[in-house]
Image 1 (cartoon, rainbow, N blue to C red):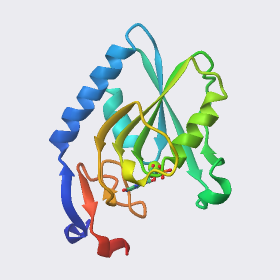
Image 2: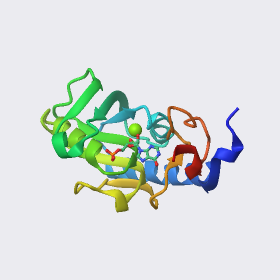
Image 3: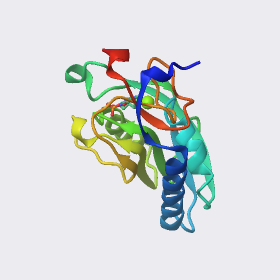
Image 4: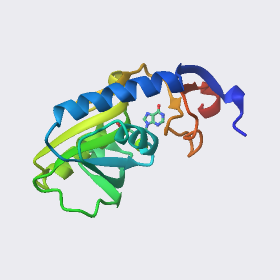
Length: 180
Ligand code: IMP
Ligand code: MG
């Protein structure tokens, strides 16, 4: 069982999350009316958000999965992205929305956006459930954001610490003594 003492403040309850995800789904459905979209779920963190958001979208949509890792030393290779799993469909002339759990430094999304743009999609937008703008190292903004958050290490709703806590149905602050 997850040690309840490792979890600090709960920022978003399952009810908060469900309400916000419905709003995002409605907004996306309205903006893409008459179009078809491909949701690009960035594994692993965004699997929960993608599952919920996709069920709140009522325009035709498919879901593809990608797993990437940004090189840790951003000063050396911020332009490079290691693709662990690529999507296996052509995206030219398709409307893509990249779905992320959280934008932190922005390096991952910035690189992904550049990389997917070279495949000539009809459009490319970014949707992140959480956004930590105070930590940004590159200039990137998501088109759709669930919540803007302060600089804390968060877990739950797909977000992990050492691969755990993803299954928590809420978003909480991980206590500092767990990772410091
Ligand atoms: P970025 O390239 O720094 O924007 O990296 C974003 C990635 O870092 C996310 O997809 C998460 O996997 C991870 N990340 C950033 N902040 C947190 C957090 O507070 N909790 C869990 N994972 C995080
Ligand atoms: Mg992630």
